[in-house]
Amino acid sequence: MTLSPLPSLLAVLAHPDDEVLLAGGVLAQYSAAGAATAVVTATWAPDSPRAPELADALAILGAGQPRMLGYADARVPQSAPGRPRLCDAPLDEVVALLVSHIRELRPTIVITHDQNGQLTGHPDHIHTHRVTQLAVHAAGLPHLYPEAGEPWSPHALYVGTHPDSGIGELGPLLERVGKTVHSTPDEQVTARIDVSPFVATKWAAILAHRSQIEGRRALPALLSGLTEEARHRILATEWYTRLDTRPARGPVLDSLNPHRADQADLWDTIGRLGELFTDLDTARGLAPELQWTLQVLKLTEEVGESAQAVIGAWGTNPRKRQSHTWLDVQEEVADTAITSLVSLYRMLGDQAPAFLTSVLENKAAKFLPPASTGHNP
Image (cartoon, rainbow, N blue to C red; front, side, top):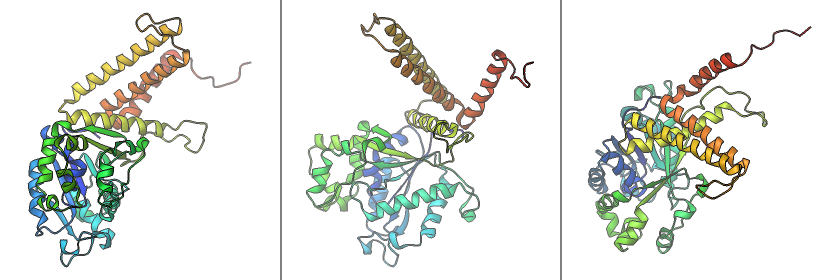
């Protein structure tokens, strides 16, 4: 899939205020870079008191107009009188609504809650995570929900989360009002985003949710009681885990053989790395050619590290005054190979495996003797 110069970003979240608490920094960052951003909110009716607050917050974040599905909050029945709770609504109905938004907006990236329910385990958060995953996959299948528009497969799905090591001051803050904190093992978190330049924007958007500021147990109210310095520490970083959205890349060789590498698994990982770096660079406003240039420069850096390791393996590296083993050399060469594959994928996308195979076949034909077709006498 070829990326447009700037990716579009869609956040699918449970309640008004989740858009800023979960992804406000990334939404503001993408909007500031000129990318299209939008938010679908699963609960609260468009004519409820929180709808104008949501509209004000989205305007501050540059995320367009509210798109509210209008289901009732699991804990606030009056949020949508006469409508079922989100958790009780027919699954197919909710997925179909989300598919229609995805196909209309055609986002490059979709963001939603993690499987834990975003820190507090709210049932609406958990259910929004489930239905968003289903909708992201269904949106790309033409035989599902044909009335919802032309199929569209987002390039990536990220779930907002908090690693165990990133809870910090949030833990005591939430526990003080009787809320249980649900975090994610660090190794499952794939992206740590520094959104410190957008903390002021995030806080302004949080303040737009006036009803939540006036409460006592809601996170916006808890944040409002902190010093500006403490609040900045909490809001300056956002964490995400990337989930698979598309089939594995490349031919499957023998995935059930534990002694044989699976090319599809290799290219799937390479592709995920390449797409992550491309998404981050694009959000910074870098043109594709500049991204490729920087990636190739990174490759030359890895080659240099391999050369330094070889020097150290033969004695002592005079520049770093350290010795290396041949295992160090092998690890540096592996890093160079991985960076090469990531560079190729960032330039060619899903065509990278076939392109590499073609180049390898030409190289083999040039240097390797023809395979023997018979027995020697």
